[in-house]
Image 1 (tube, rainbow, N blue to C red):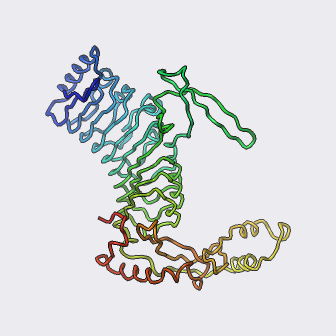
Image 2: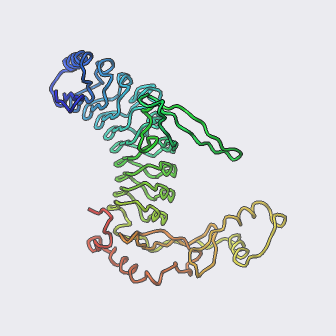
Image 3: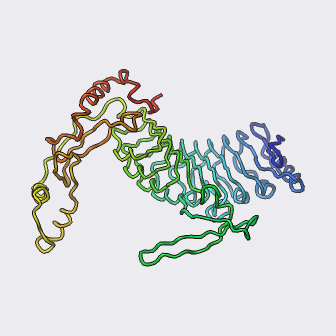
Length: 415
């Protein structure tokens, strides 16, 4: 037994050559000892203990447990014993054999764990998809599913956000287990305020409602990043390295709290220019992507259709029309016009455009290849003259990975 501090205790049974029966007996005995003790057992460490299933003693002897580590075992399922740990905040179950049907206990989303669990590490298992029950864990701050077999990120990942509530602790509730929170509801027709009670376990007094802050999905087979991922406003650390991602959705620019973005060892050839809006970003890892060593030069251009040529003429020459002049499908098409980003051009495009890679300084820290869309091959990119020399030099440098100048990627983590 290792004492962890005043009123806290830790039981470390890792790497012991105990049989399952001996381990059960040991845990039952420790649980009995703690029932009448002043100190509650808060941390139980069982990594590398040759476990094939969770010990049954977890279901009754450790009601105050806050951290459980069962990493590095042979677990194929986390049994119902887990649901009895109503105060558990951290669950470490990496490097097991979890991932098949029944890997997580039934009723997880309806159990007290839904309101208490803040850190969950299931990396190094066999999950092929993110279990739906994990997306209902309302208190989750850190989720790690790296080194699995995930094929995609579900759009329901946005369920891990929590609505922002501004709360106040009234004197009459001081020391109680609930808070009284004013919720401001806005409807197109009316705005009003409700007072609700919410368990203290769901509230962080310094940051409001607990939200997901760290998401680790590296080392999988993910090909796309869903736009819904941008609906996690408190996300600070996003790890998507060692996947098969080919593009980054521009919606990620809405992650205003993001400080670290790991995208190394993917298939990225460019980044959306909206990524420049991530003003708090401190770390951007891009090594091992095509955009770091060889940039796209020759991009195909399909000539515009007669429909698009006619629509461009109407827009460029400001030919007036009314909803009574054209069929509905043409009116909708004309409404889809996009302005050419070159301020000297004034052109528009619809379905046909020229894609161009352009190097842009990111907050003076490093240069990124961003995608620009132009109306025609004859249209030059804005600011092309100002960046011509640096762009030419960058293209020359990218001919050979060994000759890429390190100072041009100062803050990009290439090593």
